[in-house]
Image (spheres, rainbow, N blue to C red):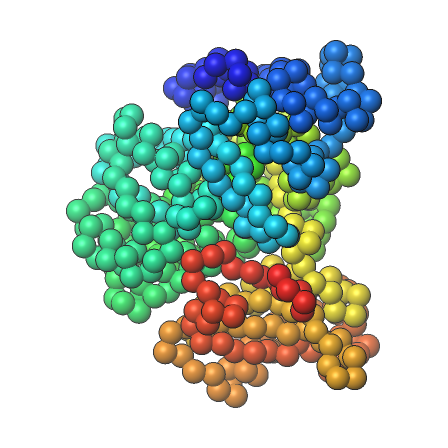
Length: 509
C-alpha cells in the first residue's frame, strides 16, 4: 500500500494475532491514538474534501498535535461531509483513477444510498478479524471447513467482504472452502445437503433473522444440524442473548462462545469490531446482574451489541453516547458519526467495573475454558440506531422488545420472528401501533395464534418498557398493538434478498 492510500500497517496478520495474546490495554490505546493522529495529518493534506472541510471549520491541522487537540476536530457525517463533495474529492489525492477498488452501497435505510469505494486494506483487516474467530479454536487449522455465505451478494458489503475474508484464510493456512449462495435459501439447503457432509464443519454466515429462517426450515427439511458441527457468523444488527441461546439449541452448536460471532461492520469502513468469546461471556453475565449491566451500559431498557475492536484498524470514540469512527479506506473517515449510539470502554476500565461487583474477568474466562482467547483490546458497545424505533403515545417502542416476545416456544412453530413496526392513525386520528408478522411457510393464522401472539407481545412490552407499561396501565385498549399476519416472504414487508426492515414510517421507509 503506497503513501497515497494513507498510513501503512506496520504489522503482518500473524504479528497482529501474536500481539493480541501479549500486549496489554495501554498498548492498544496508545497505538490507536498514534495511528489515528497519523491518519488525520495525512488526510488533512492529501484529501481535498477533508482539507476544505477543516478550512471551513477554521481548523489548522498543524496545531492538532495531541489526543486532547484531536477532540477539537469537528465531527463528520454523511450530511455535512460526504454529501457535500464530489466522490473523487473525498478520496486520496482527489482521484478514483489508477486504483483497484470495489464499490459498495449503503442500504439506504435512512435515505438515499451512498457508494463507498473500498481498497484491499479493508478486505485484509476483515480477514484478520475472521482469523481471530477461527483462531479461538486451534483445531480449526486442521478441520476442513465449508463456509456458506448467506449475506446479500449484490451491491451490499456483507456478502463480498465475508467471501474475501475467508478466501484470504483459505489461501493462507486454513483448509477453507467457500460457496456464495447469498440469500437464496434453496441453494443454501442444496449446499447443506450435498456439500456439507464432505467437510468436517460448516460456517453459516448471514443476518440474524435469515439465519433463524435457515435453522427453522432446516429442521422441517429433516437436516441433522448436529452432524454439520455448525459455526455461525452473524452481522448487521444486535440481538438478545435469548436469541443466541435459541439458535445454539436448535442448531445443536457445541460452544456458543467460540462457535458464534456477531460482526459490527459497515459499508463505510468494512469490519470495524466483532464479538469475541470474552464479550459474549461478559454480556451474558451483565444480563443476569442488573448492577453490572447499568454500570456498563447505563441504558437499562436495551441490550446492545458488545464487541472488541483493533484500534490500528478503526478507532472509536463516543461523544455524548454518539459513536465516532476514524479509519483508513480509499475514502478515509475522520471522527465520523456513523449513526449508532453507545460507548467505548478500555479493557482496564471494563475489568474494574466487574471487580467492583466481585467478578474477575480472567477467572470467569478460565472457568469457561476461554483463557487463551482473551485479548486486552478495547470494547465498543452499540445500541440499535436511534432512528430505528417508533413511538406510541410518547413511549419509544424498540424492535428488540418485540423480538424477545417472538422467541416464545408457542409462537416459533408458526412465526419466523420477522416483523415490521408502524405507528399509524385511524380515521379519528387516534394513534396505534401496527405490528406486521411473517408466518412460516405453509402456516395459517387462527384465533388461537392471534390471541397468544398479542398476549405475549403485550407482556414483553410491559416487562421491558416502563413508558409503555405506564401507558398501558392508564389507557389499556388504546395502546394494545394491532397485529397483521402475512404469508412467508410477502413482498410488502418480508421481501427476500434484503435486510429486514424492523421499523417503517407510515409515509415510507
